[in-house]
Amino acid sequence: MEGDEMPLSLNASSSTSPRRYEPSEDIFPEMLSWIQDANTDQKLAENAVNHISSKVERALKPLETTYVESQYVKALLTTWAETSLNKAFSYLEDETTDISKEMSNILDELDSINSVEDIDTKLNEKTSQLWTWFNGGRPYIQLILEQEDLFKNTPRFAILLNEYFKKVKRCFINKVFSRCKNDIINDGLNSSSLKEIHFSSN
Image (cartoon, rainbow, N blue to C red; front, side, top):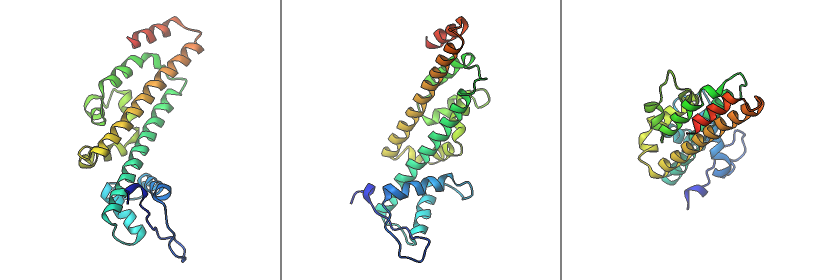
């Protein structure tokens, strides 16, 4: 049986018999809810397995554990990506922000980082706007960095992490250029804005 098709029976809260839950329908939302619940304790992969185990009221089989871990990884990466993008978009959609003054630095920083690890090692926490955007996903990004065996030493999860990172990075770039384009249109093709765009693109 393939892990992605593995059914788990989560106990319903009522007195009726537990119903069958299709993982693609139920386990991922359950993982999202659990990860995003600030009132629960640590959100490590092993805690996720224990959480689901408590739901089914039994120890999980090896294949079930593997499946839960995969859904945990997807839920954690999804949550990190969404919170980071929300942080960036909130900033860039604020019309009072003069992005032309920061565009060159932001694009240079985006060009300098190629992994999640680079966020903490190559970006200045105190001065980098990009660091603030990426870390809008804390504590989620910290969970990724702390679980090196899961996200770095497990090939399929390392690949998935890299895919999410590239998508977030690409969204940042597209949003920055979109904001600058809108500013130029709104400013009536102001020459100073055009100068900033030309400089940042080189």
